[in-house]
Length: 351
Image (cartoon, rainbow, N blue to C red; front, top):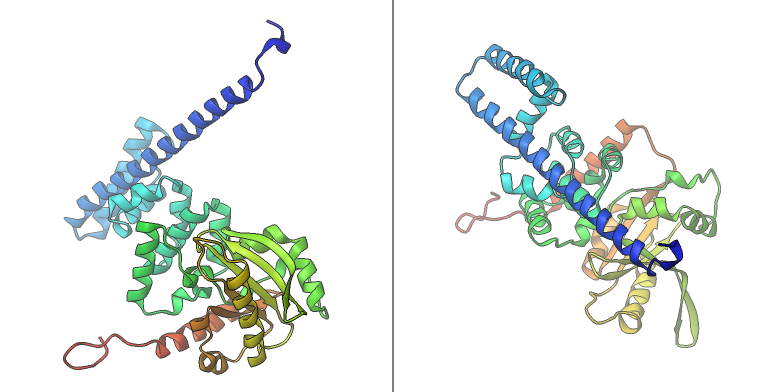
């Protein structure tokens, strides 16, 4: 039969069927592999619980590694078996493993096991699942201390757990999971003196990298979005839409420190967007002010988050990791000290 006689669209349809089947098969194989590793780790872990001697544990893992490698080849080295045991010990719920393995590979899990703090590890696992990060992206996000830069990390542990459970069980995102502080804009290549227009142009030039830093659910809508209020023109620097939150996100760029007047400006923009741009089924727009610096007491007094406004610093050059860690730890400790404490019914003392 001549190629010209093949019905239009037939090859495309067949390719779609084949590639779809291959994709589903790859997911199924990955899930089975991850669950197998978890079950192997669980079985060895259970065996080791009966024996307190560390030397016994080393002997068991070494022996099992030799036997399984002889039978099945690669994949059962002693370090990998240790990771399987750690995996089962730190993620004991098989249902959670099953859910995550639909999106995450064993290589993802080995990166997650390097995160020691359980809430941080669960955060990275769930956001990685939702945003479909590659292993390389996950590694970069962990290295960039994404969790410590979220508003979520500054909440009491019980509230963090509630939000992570809602994300896992209902795919429900909240602004505290989405917004960060500071934002890393080192990829823009800005040096020394630059204007707000330069900053804006650099962001649009590196839009893919900017969205990766914001979060992959962000979609670009407009630059210099024009609003007409009482016959006067106003312009929003950058307008995005967040699919998970189902909200418009107005972003204002400031070269200087945050000022109280910045609140009034973006509040006006959000009210206009809510009245003129919000569609049925969407939540009210949110604002993000990206600035070169901010004073925390001023932010707290203005109660910005109650009005849907978030203020965050941006860094156009990354500081040494030790400096960044110290900065984030200080911010986290201050926020947690000022978080409302849960009180007991009888004594009114912090739990």
